[in-house]
Image 1: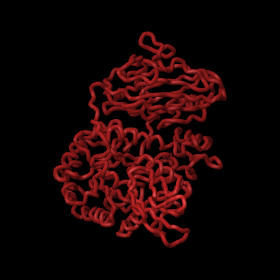
Image 2 (image 1 turned 30 degrees about the vertical axis):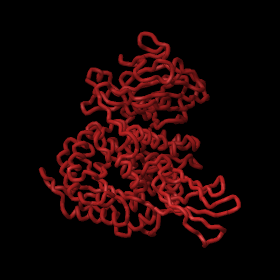
Image 3 (image 1 turned 180 degrees about the vertical axis):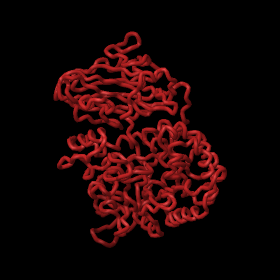
Image 4 (image 1 turned 90 degrees about the vertical axis):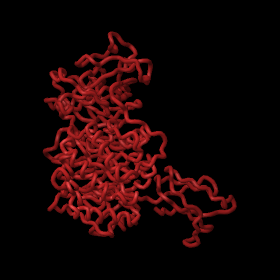
Length: 623
């Protein structure tokens, strides 16, 4: 899951004297600030692009906060990303637009220099002057000014511009600003193109051509999964309420899951340095989970989970990390290829940034390969395995059996409503999906100003623009697919889900939308979770939670455009059998074809069908 840091996104001008380490940007940022005449900026939301939308909560005056927005949207260095943002000014006046790079603090306290290129900026409902930056003088676009710093400038290469011959290059401490005149009550839509500038002194991860690598072949075994959590990752002496028997694996396979993810707190059961020997009894518990999954035809992902010390400070725990993975790899060296290893769950913070993790992961992979040369390995970026952090992940170029894992719990104030562990911001319950609610809800007391603004939008924005809607995750899924296609590395969404404090209908709506979005892009997933707080399976009834079977494993809807031609849409790697009956009856069905989908579309033509030979067809999902 990802945490907002935008409340800290101010910069002391004195920091400019520090050395700013260079990094590839994964976000582009723009800020809006209305003058006194506009009174406030309202109903701001993205109409295109994967973004976080906040008020400038670091401003001291609540009035200034309501007169502002700050938006971070996902970008990559290999293509221009488009983004659109719509807002309505309450009054007439000027709105200052500032374009920049993201705020991110490095371990030495300086702000990373993450340069972003901008081009083809425009507005509807207002006039944005020189948005393609073609008119320039003294290195600056006319009508724009340096907010502070001296770095922002017009550039003309080597990246091909979107429009004309120029674009601008900015970063957080080197932004550009302009003024946009607005009319009260008239909605304004701002359109942008942005991409990360790739620093000349950095080396990019090599692209793997095609989609026929060992990782791509393995990914087809990890398309529909469930996390069997709240068990092995619990610290010793704690019982988090979930327990597993053979029947759980039997039921998971019957429901339609093809794999399980097994979170495990290996660090709790490792001995002292330097060997960090894992307790054999804990290996026995892990063996029970792995063996029963494989025995039921399920693939399995075994990870390191809930190791907070490594997740926030990887360097200080590197030797133990290597020792744990060396032992796990040796223990399971002879296991089926349907068992995969996942290096670390949700690393986060400056001490476990993706840049810090990259060489540590490379060495761990090298050690695993000594005993498991053909084992599939899952690895993910920092920032809670955040999708927007994919651009900073560097994997060993020569290893083509690595699947990249990411997590997504958006929209967070829907999916985590009523949960206590994230803090007070998730205390508001009764949030529906999709919004808006039939009757506005009042947020719980004690929540942050950003959350208050989120609920204001939730209560008022239409379904197509509501923050509690597929808009919250659709662009993130698309960004993951784009990254996967560019680098030739399959992506798997290892966690997503909605806590059971949400109402059953909203939960089913959410799982339907998230699952169908991922499957349409050919991305495998593992929902959180099987039988714990977000459960698919309800242990008290011995059945799926209401509505979830239809949400996760819907029956195909067959269509036809000519005699004997059968078409339906489903998910990659699902296997279907087509049956035919020459008459409308409950018996007399004959299997005529079996097909495992390699695309999301199933097409079949019955060679025995004809214009005068009517037939009935059904598709039976086998696995």
